[in-house]
Length: 323
Image (tube, rainbow, N blue to C red; front, side, top):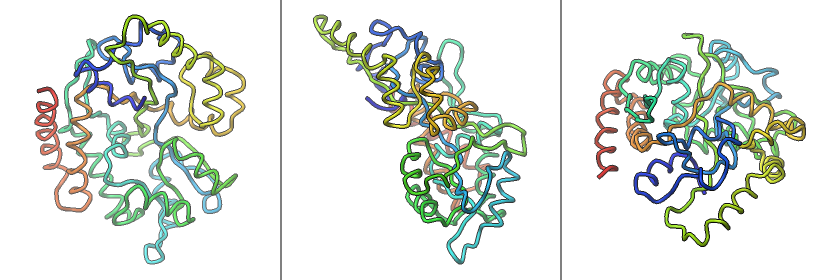
C-alpha cells in the first residue's frame, strides 16, 4: 500500500507483479491507472486517484480564486505584509513536487516517456530553467511569498489566517475544512500568464501492490479481496470517509459522489494534471531536483547552471538505483 512512485523501484527489483491477473484494470479511470502503468502493465491496484496540488484560499481574505498567475500575483501583493508575517501566497518552496506544475506550464516535464514506456530524464530543459526562475521571481521580485517556507510553515500561516492563498494537496482538505469551514475555497491551479497554459499538477493516488512471491494457493483469496476493495460500495465509502476521489469509473459516476461538496473541486483541480511517472527515473529525478531547487531558491545557484547540475546528478542516481 502506498503512492505510485514506488512502483518503478519495486518492479525493477521484481518485488511486485502486475495487477492484471487479479482485477479488471479497465474498470479504473485512466487518471488512476496510468500512474502505475509500466511498459503496458498496471503494476498496482488503484484505490483512489488525485494526491495532487490545488489552490486553496481563505474567503475571509479574498472572495474568489484567480484564473491566471498574473491575477494571483496582483491579489497576493495586496495581502502581503512581510513585517507582520502576512503573505499573499505560501507553499513548500524547496520541494520539487511543488515545482512540477510550473515545469508543465512552461511546456516541459521531468521525464520524457516513449510509446513503449521507456523513460528519459529531461531536467536540463528550458521549461525547467524557466520554472525555477519563475519561483525565484515570486520571492525576490514579486515578493508575495516568504523568504523561507517549508511545508509546516505554509500550512501554519494559512490556518492562522496569515496567508490568503496556499498551494497544497488534496490530503489537506479535511484539516483545512475543520479550521475554516465554509470560508475555505478550493480551486484548480491557475493558468500561467506567460504561456497561457495551466499549471500542471502531478496526479497519482494510493495503490495496493501485489507481492511477486504470492503462493498459488493464495491467489484466489487475494483476487477476491482486491475486487472487494475496488467494488462500487467500498470505493464510495472511501470517498465519503477520506475525501478522496474514487479510482473506478462506476464509483466516480455514481450520484452520491456528485453530492460530495469537497470532492467536486478536487476533481476539477485534477483535470489539468498529468500522471506522475512511476518509472525508476522519477525517483532519481526527485532526489536530484531537491537540493538544486533549494540552492536556487536561496540564491546560491542560478537556474541556468542548476538545471545542468540536476541532470547530471539524476543520471548518477539512476545508475546507482539500477545496479
